[in-house]
Length: 368
Image (cartoon, one colour):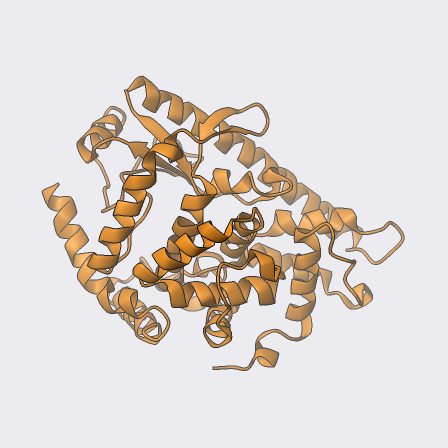
């Protein structure tokens, strides 16, 4: 594995210093801005899906100092405004979906995306993805709700696709997420079930007068978001947007009792080692303070994760190998198998059971 100096140096080190300035209003102005490759920084933000977050820092730069060229700054502004508009649209769609679920006798809890954005200083600059709605109902009830609008359902173990709008992908979740290891997944599902009531009653007001909606509590998200990050780490590629979400979550703080509970649960889920690697990335790349860390960072594992963040980016869009995924089934299988093999030392329980779990999920979906 490459050394730290090879991983974060040169322009990348400057980009990350500027990112830390963008994330924390108390962070001082980055040094040596005169040498900043602004076009490179924009491209870095595009690949990592953090264009809007970086624009927060552009707005804080002093007039008369080093800034991006005017045409690039205008492009940055235009892109950020489009992000704001899409966020507002997704907020409205999410609230409407929750309302429709309520009319059908079920409750909805908005996972990830728009809920995570609420922790940002400016929620509207987070690049949004799809809408993931955890539904408080049986699989049959959720499927019946989806069938009211769809002729054919595309179901997986933990959600059913709900493509009723062209502008945004929607998933109705039977459960927030899963682990491939059967024993660990059973514990995770028990944690979700035991925490469920407080999630569906945890309402927040979305920006732009979109309305109120339930989102997960910080207590659930400290576990669930790590499960989500690990899922991306193994399957899709992981980018800084995922880490920024978790950065702002941990900056909300937690008690010593909550920390003890979380670490013990992560250990039972086989995720404690992976979580320690994530803590290193959060501190090394984003500057998360010691007081916000759930556990002691693991430098060796953290650098392995950093390499993947740098080489793959958001959803693996930087890594050219992922361009073939979905086009050739055989090639897709071998690329994924090769990646999983490299991850055996990082997430052994998940990497060693992923193919068995994939087969089991197909059987489960076909019989439920």
